Image 1 (tube, one colour):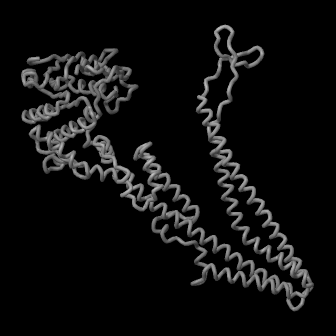
Image 2 (cartoon, rainbow, N blue to C red):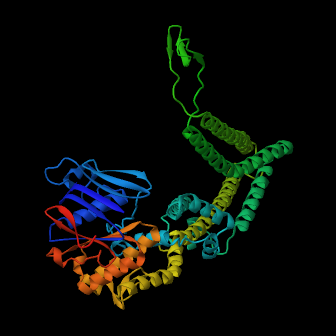
Length: 555
C-alpha cells in the first residue's frame, strides 16, 4: 500500500509504503500527527478529520504558504485522494478503506455506551433474530410482532424503537383525551370516571335502567290519569314515550356521528396530502429536428416539461382513487347516520309536543303539576342511565389504552439499544473477549477485556485506574480488534512513544500478528534510535525532519 502526502499541515512531502508496517518517527512537532491525520482523511473519506475544523475551514489544514495539498493512498485495487483546501475525497477502483476507529479518529472507550454497543453489534453481526424478539415479548400479538419485525428489516432497530415511541405517545394522548387527566402507570391501572363516585354503594347500570323504566311507567300512568279522551291520551302517551326513547338513543347516535365525521375528516386530510398526478401533454413532431414539441397556442410551442414517470403517475392516480373511494364510503355512512339522527330528533320533538298537549288537556284527579313532576323524574332517571353508559365506556376505553401503553413500554425496552440487542451482544462478548485476549497475548500484554457494561480493563484493573501507557495498550488492542471485525484495510496508531521499549516491541508484535497494514507514528530524539523495521522484516521505518519524510535503515 503506497501513500503520498503533499503540503498537509506540518508536512511538505512524504512518500511511504505500508508493507505491512510503516513506522514514522521524528522529534516533537516534526509533523508525525499530520501524516496520521492526512492518511486517516483519505482512507475514511472524511477530508476534515479533526474535531473543530469544518470543511469550509479546511484551508487551515494546508501547509503555511501553500495553495494546494493532497494525500493519496492506494494499492493494486484502487486509490483514494483527499484534497485541500476543498476538503474533498475522490476515489478510483476499490480504494483502501478504514473505519474511524481503525484510523485512530475515535476509540471505543471514548464512546457513549449505547454508541459503543451499536458499533459492536454491527461489527460482530450480533443482531437478534425474530425468534429471540418473539421470546422477549411473549405477550405481544403475532400481528404486532410481525409489524415490528417488518420495520426492523426495512429501516433498522432504531427506527422501530422510534416508531414504538410514537405509538406510545399516541396511546397516552388518547388515554388523556378519554379521561381528561394526565397519564401515569398507577393511575392508568386504577382510573375510574368521577360519575361512579356520585352513585350509592352497589348501584349498577341495571339498577338505573330499572329505575328509569319505573319512572317512565309512572309518567305514562300520570298522563293517562288526566281524564282526557282515552284514545287521544294513548296516542299522545305513545308519542311522548317514543320521544323519550329517541332521546336515549340520540346521545349514542350523535357520538357515533362525531366519530364518523372525524374519520371522514381524517380521510379527507390524507386525500389532500397525496401527491397529485400530472396531466399528460400532447406532442407534435418538430419538422426540423424531428423532436417532440408541445403546442401552447397558434403561434407558440415549447419543449415537453420534465415530469414524473408513467408508473409513478399511475401510482398517484390509483392512490387518489383508492382514497377517494374510502372517503365516499365514510361520507355515505355519515350521511346515513345523519338521516337516522334526523328521524330521532323528529321523534323527540314530536314526543315533547305530545307531552305538552297532554299537559294542556283537562285533568281528572291527576294535575298538570303531577305529570310535570313525573316527566322531570323520568328524564332525570333516563339521564343517569345515559351518563352511566358513557362512564362505563370511558372506563373500558381507558383500561384498553392503559394495557396498550404498558405493552408498548415492554416493546420499547426490548427495542432500545440497551435492550434485546445488548443481551444478544453480551452473549457474543465471550467470543470478542477471546479475540482481545489473543491480540493482547501476541503483544505480551495483560489481557484486555470488556465487561457486560462494555467497561474496559487490562488484566484485572479497570480502565479508569490505569496509567496513560496502559490505557494506550487497551485502546490499541480494541482498535485492532474492531478494525479486523469491520473489514478495515489498515490501522493508524499515533503517539506510540508513550510506550517504553518493551511496550513498543509488543505493539509491533501485535500488529505483525494480524498481518494488517499499519501506520505507526512516535516521537524519537534521533534517527539512529528509530527501530529498523525493514531489518526485522516487519516493514519500513522513516524519519521526518524539516517537513520531509525519508526512509531509514535497509529498505
